[in-house]
Amino acid sequence: MLESSDPSSSSFISQLSLNRDLLGVVIGVTNSGYVLFEGKEPTGLGEYVIITNDDKKKILGVVESCLIKSDALDDISNFQEALESKSVAEINKRDKSFKISVKILGLLDLLKQAKVILPEIPPLPGTEVYKADENDLEEIFNPNEESWIRIGTLLRNSIVPAKVNINRLTTRHLGILAMTGMGKSNLVSIIAKSISGIPGTMVIFDYHDEYRFLEGENINFVQAQINPRLLTAEKFAEVI
Image (cartoon, rainbow, N blue to C red; front, side):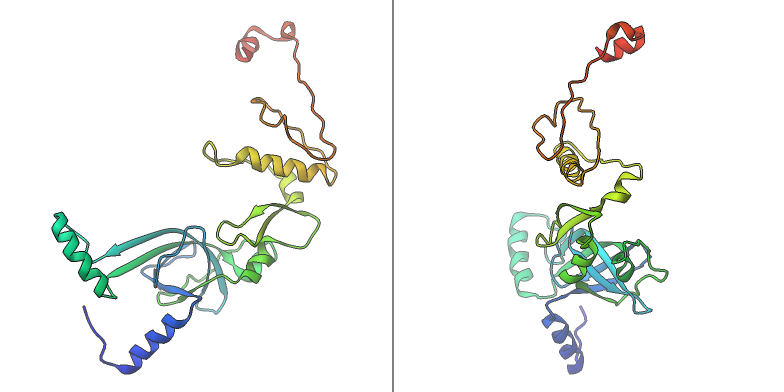
């Protein structure tokens, strides 16, 4: 591994490491949708980051993966070797690398206007990556407008409320997709409560009786009934 003998280089690296908001430096091949950066430490999934591209426009991204590698502990063949290599890894400050993948969400200034526009020019390798400022996240995810309803908070920035534009939500086709237990029904409940308080109208066909305890203003429960005599044999078979 190469060591720099230039004192100014060491000083520059020290200055970078002292910047607490600096997360890392972009490496490898970049594009307008994804970048990879080498981190000075692990960065959690869901963390929002700021990258500045070549024309000085700030880009907002979110961390999708973080891979950690130790050169000393790579290709270990037995337990004793692992213990010995562990000691080497603890001494060598350059032993570990943190490869962090970021999905680009769009240009920061336009996201604040609720416009999702990806950068024309991808970030250059060597570009610094910083932790997103909470004030910027507030402007994007917590607009102070009546048409935006709160659905929760950001995963890694829990003090920042997360809102959606109810007008856009109700004028477009919407699918809420996730694995079992990930909160689909809870999200629908939150949206339903918000719409009922506007007041607005939302009809839920509750096939699995998940919303019987839904509370809020102007919420009416209707016991759905059908007359089986009016169904065709095929439809009746589907029902039962």
